[in-house]
Image 1: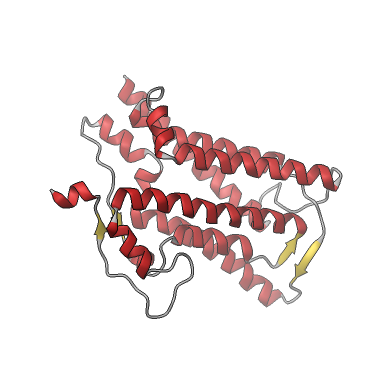
Image 2: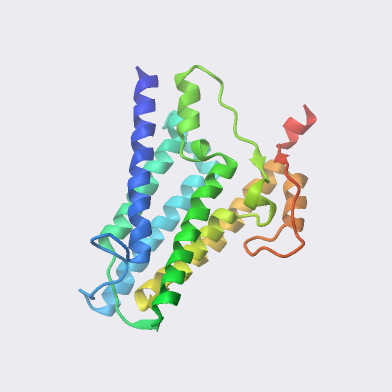
Length: 257
């Protein structure tokens, strides 16, 4: 029974993510959703800033803390290991939904592109960024990232083994194409309001902090293999002539075996 319940639980959280993330794309790009990042201010500027920074902090703390190995070690004493990642997805969904639900527009325009052609190109570039983000998850292990692989292994009675890190496709050119997709999606805005700018600057800052923490974990797990990859390949911006060979990174104990 627990196997079936875990499978339903993970599937529900994944479907919720698909809905929430699809809405989030419209939220950031001001496309096809009833409430987007921009709009008519409803509260004083100071209240809106405090509110929005609090929402962003909740989102950042949840993502960072629950992704740390030490937290996972403690958390799996409470939550069964097969649904640890699915539970992370659940809390991420809740943090994202809360952010979009309670977000307060602040008005003010930093820049606005008047040319319909350029405006359309920037919107297309933003959508391309989100497409790069999603594609990047499949270049490593999409199903593991969202907790489905772990639950499926438990459901079928197989031993779960963590995925090996692959430096294929976009990972041959930048170490973090997923985060690059976020940066493109956030910054390629035909109209950059004060609201959008604060959101984008804070998210970009969080991404840089997230990369630092993630790379500490990757270096600890993969050792010199990741250190060498880090030396050769740029973090976010591709550099002509800098390209990694296609390979699969294995942790040191796998290499020894």
